[in-house]
Every structure is written in structure tokens, then in C-alpha cells.
Image (cartoon, rainbow, N blue to C red):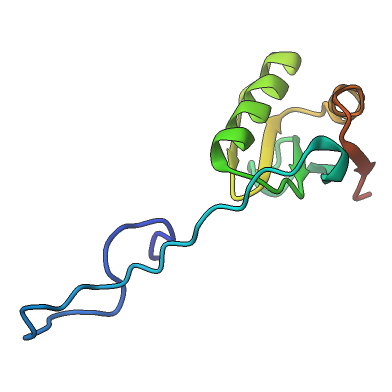
Length: 115
């Protein structure tokens, strides 16, 4: 499976044109919305971690740096590991209520999602 964030050209093998410049299709990141305009979903997931519980926060709109900063705050709050990429924050363990309370205090619109 090809890496989506790879800087390698996808589909171009060779070009005889000496002036050829491959367009990587880099998309500009969206600016980070203020917390009042974010619509976040908090859910419990057992599929991504091999049956272990993990709390997912989805729906974040903004830069990867801001996403990483929020993920770091959530991981520190829960004293757990996790990751953040493509608008999704994963925190290892079942911390739905703790994360929801923290995000509401920060001013985010948060809903509990899933079963």
C-alpha cells in the first residue's frame, strides 16, 4: 500500500522531457477553526488497536501542528499514549468522559458518538 503523505511521485516512471517538473499535488492545510466552530465526536473504538480499547476524537479541522498540540494535551490529561493524524486523535484506553469534560471546558462543541 502506497504512503499517502509520501513525497515520491505516484504514477510517473520516467520522462524524457528535461524541463519536466512533477506536480506532487500538495494540498494546503486548512486554517484551524476556533474551538466554538469545531464539531468534535468522541467515541470508543476496539478495532484499531487489536481489540484493546481506545478513545477516538474525530472531526478536528485545522493544521497538523494544532492537532498534535491538542492530542498532546489529551494524552497528558489521561496519562496515556496515543497518536494524531488526518483530523483524528487516538488516546489509548477508555477516557471518553474525561476527554469530553476537558474539551467542553476549552470551548469545543463535543458529542458522544458510537455505541
